[in-house]
Image (cartoon, rainbow, N blue to C red; front, side, top):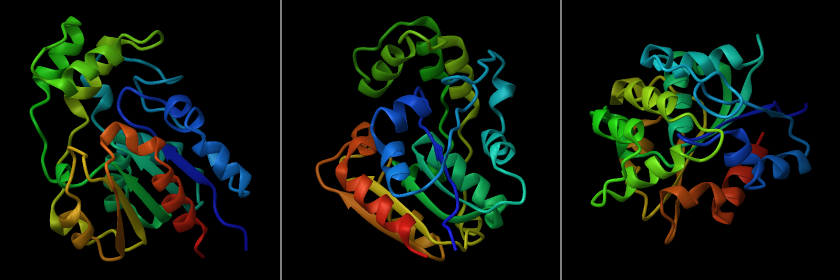
Length: 226
């Protein structure tokens, strides 16, 4: 029986092209005979870029709408994409066979006030004392990006999960996180999922994860399992 198609969900400020095509991961999946479902979140890549924060209030639902009807898929997500895949798996675990979640951990249990980061993206002013916010502001100015749309997304993309939520996700899940990732550690996340395993990438920070050979190997091996 052929393995299912694979949806790839990118991180904030990225796109299918940047997160998965340019890193080579989408091509690696194709090389092993897996059909990839191309997907861009609102505000990113080829998708519409509304400036109303309410357009980003249910990103997990946007993924659900992009999935083929009546078809179980595998899915791989990084950062925002991983968090939203997990949100959808809590609601509708039957939509997935296997999940690979990279670049998330302790952060899924908190919904931070993102207004300061959103305001920095809107204004285009890079703070000198916050490296991550500075990176977000710089990345929002890349040609093709819309800072106002990205700021609107930042304001609404965070929804906290609980340990009770995680118990609903009974499918096999692989969590991949760098030991230098600000989203970690991922121990509580892995322990809370009924069927999960963890791969920790040594000397890898958050934004390096989707380009890591350790991530490639772990994800491809996990998705190849029947």
